Length: 302
Image (cartoon, rainbow, N blue to C red; front, side):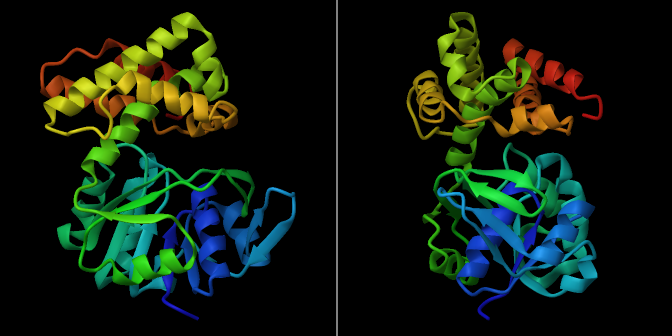
């Protein structure tokens, strides 16, 4: 086997990454807490369904005990944002003293949460537009190839090599904040509305009042990004959001899927984070605040 890779999480993205990395010959470990997911991964491996409906399985080592994967040199953090504190505690036990944890999570604040337990030198930032849908425990369907952007770090070598050998579309960037906030603009504008209305991304464009709300959410988030001195990767946030909604018209956002399952969402790290950062700058973001509170109200355990 090639370089060992630790994936923190057992959901859609973690399972997708596991199949691709294992297929390329890498030894993949998965660290999680979801009992059904771990049981399926242990018994059947990480499984993926292709565009033709064919299922393939790949071997992985899955555990809920961080001591069993102690000494990990590189870890990809692929859990939901509300699980980041738990992931940090697990990684404190499993990551090597000179190891590197890379977050590819939605929202903002995940890197800072990880650094509190792991230290600045052992945490790096990344972002991905790769999509995946979890069909069941340990079973995933790819949602189209996106881009993985990793912030430059001298310890990235083994992970970069592993991802490239697994045919991921990878780029190394000097500063990921622009891309992180660009994705935040998109997520804040699309995800809560699809979750609240229970509709696909494209449906937001066909409802005039909802489309206006989507634009307002995008503008609010872009205003906070400007106050944070972040230059977004696009000049017109409303056009950028509408373009994504159009290109992913048939997709159900991850937040919509979470609400439908009655599971906790990432609203705190998206609209909640925008609202908190806005308050620090004295900026009013009524649409983000409303969506934050409404989505929290939909799922009782948020």
